[in-house]
Length: 558
Ligand SMILES: [Fe+2]
Ligand SMILES: [Fe+2]
Image (cartoon, rainbow, N blue to C red; front, side, top):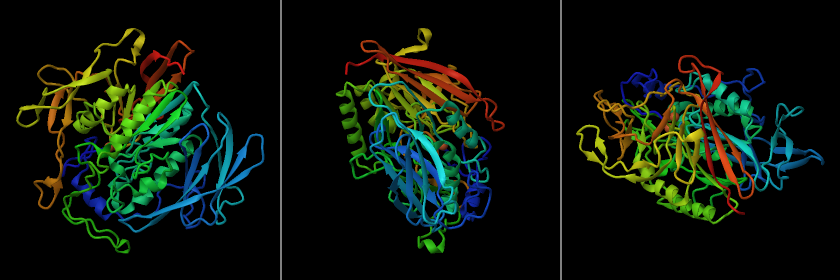
């Protein structure tokens, strides 16, 4: 996420300039600026030709996969043809989901084919088409692997804050293309995309076109392996549903969470690991969703029928589930604790509880207050985040210290609920006993135009220092007439929990290899973080190893 302070420069500053606010309000591009991959740059026709094809897991990744896509117009008889390795093709009818963008009035057509009863560990080919598919004679085709059942070794990858390769969109960068290629280089079983998918809400009059460029960029990978997302602050869009998530929710078919808030949070189990994807906008203090600075109102297209958005408006959704998400999280964690087939618990969310980024957002006390005690109680092993566009790894943490922060303005003591590290030096061989604490990772270096790999330092002691948001930073008038701004974090603390920070590159990818071990032995997860050297200055396809840690624990008796 980026802050939104009126009048600041955009160059790697983590803020959007006033000029860009004006540009956002007046931008008029309404069609995709990124040609369909492999299809040249023909003008789009509003037919049912599939594009933006991507996979997600269903509730059980060893038997259910969703294949989703969009098309420029309404598809007639949208369908998937599944080609198992050793049997005849079958047809799966796709379900249509649409939404009409609340700012430019464009209706978006998406399609979702649920493929059930797959063979665990099997590989499949598929194609997607419709009666009005312009490529109907040679429809889009790809293949995928299904997760195995029981304990097995597998790899996943992760980052957040991807954007699109179309640099004319706010916060987009060609690095976004290299980031997708990086996933394919490592050939994971699946990828976790930790929020801030494409920053459509920073291009308010062209949101569906930004989403299309995102979808067509990730298709190179996401059509071949599930990409599992969580919502970030930049998925929150004006006039698109109660939390602004209509676009996100329409485009992704995700495991059901059994609550009245489908799609925002979910879990799935692969091998001996439970993956929990959370919607942190529900608990954070910071106000970082859609925001209109002014000075002119943001005027939706007349066809949308929507009211103008006055300067100083932000879509602040903290607390929207009224505790339902946290209740679901505790029930999910308790069930995992009782399930001896689960050795590992990995949480994915967008915003950060432990980040010492200097120009980014920093840490949010809302997550520390509500979710970190649950992570402690139920032994969550890893928390994977984005939001600050850098790489930071924490020491394993358990519990917290109170009243050790300082107000940024007055210096008065502030309770930042500072997480307590259980060790503060690298263990022998880089092998961490995962039973002792939770490691938090910031993996915000997907492919935006704003790397933020500068970190806080206490000027008095020289130790790492973190900004902490402990209260809502709602919009307030700026010095410019009619223009509003949001201030950043209100507190500082010594980041005694910070273990490693990448000051060389703001871009990278986390690669995780889970080894289930043998009965009666140890199980491990090896994290290797690869960063894109030189990419802060020039987009780069060169991802090189920066950090390696091994988490180890006794394998549970199933
Ligand atoms: Fe971001
Ligand atoms: Fe963010």
